[in-house]
Length: 140
Image (cartoon, rainbow, N blue to C red; front, side, top):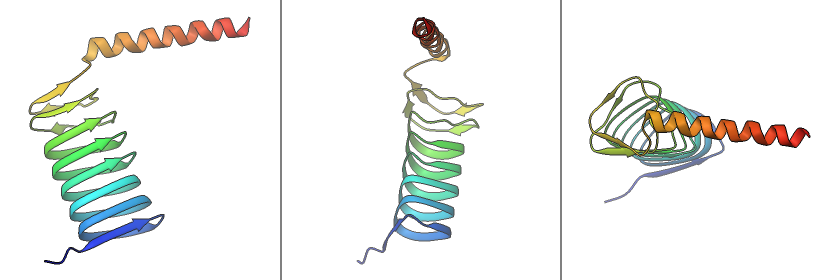
């Protein structure tokens, strides 16, 4: 069985389709495929069975299994998700997933977070206070 693999780097493209797609440092309008890997990519729509993103941004992600690390997605629809240090402002549909912090309007499914809302706010307040204190000492 032949594997059709596409590797793309440093390009601006409209539509990409394939079974195995690897995209690096590019801008894409639409990606459709089986296994999609992206690093430092900006995309409008991504649709695939298995999607791995690192330092990428997408308007919409839709797939069976999605792994996102240091990314942004406006809407994510998946059966299995693994979200690390990412921003998801719209609803999330997940099954048995985990994340460090989730910023979402609505979460459907079983999602385990390391930091809850109160802990995140407290951690942000302490970090902001320490930063402000250091800036005051720096001026003197």
